[in-house]
Length: 348
Image (cartoon, rainbow, N blue to C red; front, side, top):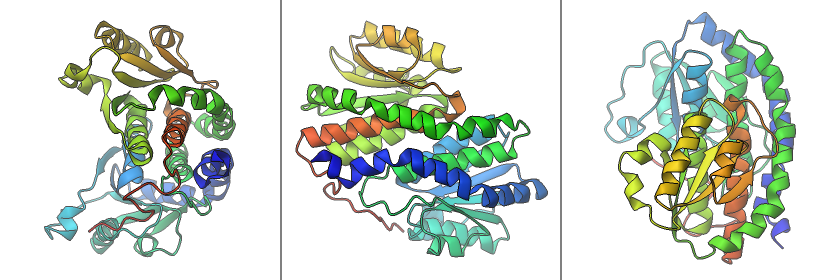
């Protein structure tokens, strides 16, 4: 039965995992935040791969918009292949890795430490090689993730980044908003049966696109990754702005476009984008709590619980995880062990 799979269970563990993260990681995040302030750091470099790289995209938006920090993603091959590491200056080097084992991510953090840079790790594996090179460790404390596809560790990574942002921000009401997220995620999981009933419609879909913007640009990439990993479909992620600059040409009647458009500053932009998709006769699948977006869409995945936009990636990814799970199951695939990939990927 699908409910007995590790993936199904881990998706449904997320409210508990996020709640635990907020409780157990607060002290270490507060200490890291103090070090950032003491050193007057205004630039963060993130080293990550795969799902963790998508969490890094979220960090670019949240740490930039709320905390005024410039955030960039490292280029690991400069360290491991070209042997040309750049000079960091006064930055925080943040390594994000569930396993803490990927040699190229560890190499970036190790070089930063060699240069005297402040280093930190977000990981589900305390004691890993990554943590040995880090001044501060944020333990996701998510428990063992047995399914190959990362779900609970991804949202725990998002929560840890949101916690860092809230700790650094002068507005302490952000912490209260963050504390409400586990309940919002639990509410969003109530969409499970609705999404299970939708999966047969897309059983023979071989390609689609996922669109997000702002904070949910990260969600688009993470959902596309989950769909590729689990359903073996060709799924591409775009911002709505980038999609209008050429890729819109792929749209024809009935082409599936998943639009992630929760309430917030982007809702007007995303509503106008859905109108453009309709002009080109796309089949729009909306993950949203915005009436104007839902009214213009073909398939409605209505978010049952609204949260502030800066936290919305923690809830909007849930329908993406569930759709990937049920579509893979509908196609008869092993949802815990997708072909050709493994849990820990060690790249150089």
